[in-house]
Amino acid sequence: MDSPLGDANTTLILLALVFLSSIVADVSCSSDDPSLSAFFYDYTCPQLQDIVRSDVEKAFKREARIAASLLRLHFHDCFINGCDASVLLDDTKTFKGEKSALPNANSLRGFELIDAIKARVEIQCEGVVSCADILTLAARDSVALTGGPSWEVLLGRRDSLTANRTAANVLIPPPIADVPKLVSMFATMGLTEVDMVTLSGAHSIGQARCSTFRQRLFDDRGSGSPDPTMQKQFLGSLQEICPRQGNGNAVAPLDFVTPMRFDNNYYLNLQYGKGIFASDQVLFSGRGITENYVRYYSYDQDAFFQSFVRSMIKMGNITPLTGKRGQIRKNCRRPN
Image 1 (spheres, rainbow, N blue to C red):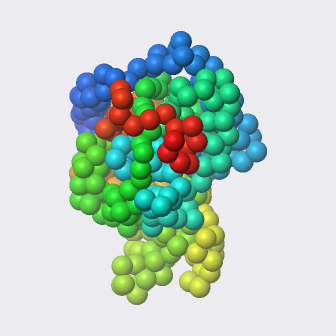
Image 2 (spheres, rainbow, N blue to C red; image 1 turned 90 degrees about the vertical axis):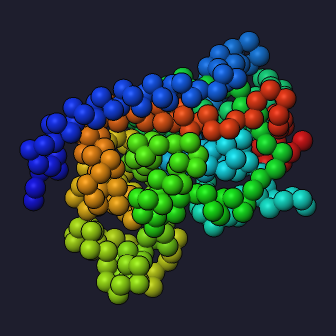
């Protein structure tokens, strides 16, 4: 098998990507919402970050899977009207919550932990800290606890008064999306193609339900055959976990090599045809920006970590509610 680093032009590609990364960094930093600040709660709730970190760490020790669940919860929140904790809302008489949307139903996890953190924060700083900021901090701490980078989270978001299940059904990237579809959906959120490849690295941790990728194993896109881009031994392993008529809620790790560690192994897996989702594997299916960055990040974990931090901050800045917009919910599951 060819080297995962590719042909003789790889070195030149990597050098070019280093230069491109510096450009991406400048663009990301310039997009920060001026209303958000790493010091937002320093005087009004100085205990906040210690509380969040402590509770996430305790939950992680009980169940390591919770880290990926919190990271995914944050992603699914930010893609619907920005990072406003709308994903945490239960159904009401006036709207249907996002929890029951197709990409989220029986899939998103971590709501109880966010409730518990919010309750502790309310005891210390009543009516001060938003659920949206708690979720953003919890996602950051989840990455750090699993071996990934940490960073200063920009704070000051407020919570939405409503949810949008219709948008959640449309705007969350599906696991069968091709590159043009992924690029378009991320661009709608103000995120670049490089952000898309970088944030996909969140699949370094976590698990996937059989129902989200089974078709690749047996009848890819109606072809009657498995996805030909999937490595054969890997395919066989997944078919054992997810037989054709098996339980759709059975799970497989997104990264079979280091499933509980946030690292760059996800990108190396793609080069060997070991991406679980079609939307992962397509990042290495053609010659272009996505494939070049897959190679780059598999070669340089530090570069991946630095880019991931920038893209996470950028995603956290998607149309936040600040100032007098929205509210500080007392209970993350319902408006005040």
